[in-house]
Image (cartoon, rainbow, N blue to C red):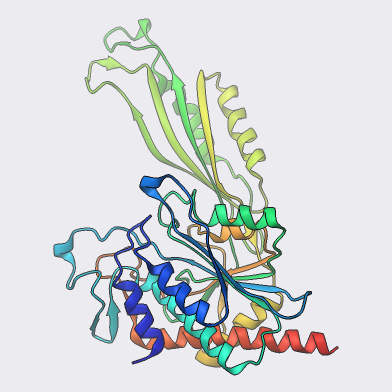
Length: 390
């Protein structure tokens, strides 16, 4: 059996539904410790929902060495109805050339590939010319408040400098290697409450319908061009996710309407500029409102450099694919790491089954992914040695 497949199956067999880790990090730490890594648990959060975090690093002999981080998460989303699965979600199962199990694609195969690639790299190199680290959490699929963000805060406070980071999110689309995420849009949500006056629907002159008051402002907001994006990002988008009003009776004008919305924004806009533009519309329409903002993450971009070159070349050499760079899709813990690391990319297996019933990864992709990660390590090593020799 492939060493990568073996480790992936061990991880999948552990029911680490967020925020549970189910000892996945203990298993990974034991493998990394055997390679000479210093492993530090940085668990965080309340006792009844403790989040497991691991920071592991093997330092180079050079005081000026750069640091590469492999990052990811051990937690998985809930299984959904068990009777819909063709096999137990936490019993790794082979069928039709695929490995089935919750977390197979998102993202336990990536973690296994990172660990095995590191083990193989350490066996072939006398000494790494850069620091190699792992930043892993069990709080990515959940609220993401006690996981990577807390480790990043601690590393920043220590003055730990990160230079490159590969996050093992499933980014490929049709074939492994066809897409790498070199950035992500920012995400910011808002909860808007517009006040009116409740009353009997037959006497509208005695009430003020907040839905009617909001409607013109809502129409204006949906028509705004927030920005036009740029070479790396599509234009900023604004979408309403929920609207609620009423008492449940069809003869009552509501006294309040509540609107939930979200911005996915490019680097052409800032969180503050978007807040100001949206609230200007509310003021223009003379609404009596309250607004609560939640900033989920800032946009980031990794422009072509030594990390992207190493990833793209490794993918090309192993798969023959000239990978596409993209900033589309949702968000990930990369948004936190990008605050202290200038070069962050996401790369992993195809994402066509993530979060679904019967999640899977193709068996043929498992060692391909490991070999790509290994190729990245080898290319960064060669570059570092070349720079040191110069």
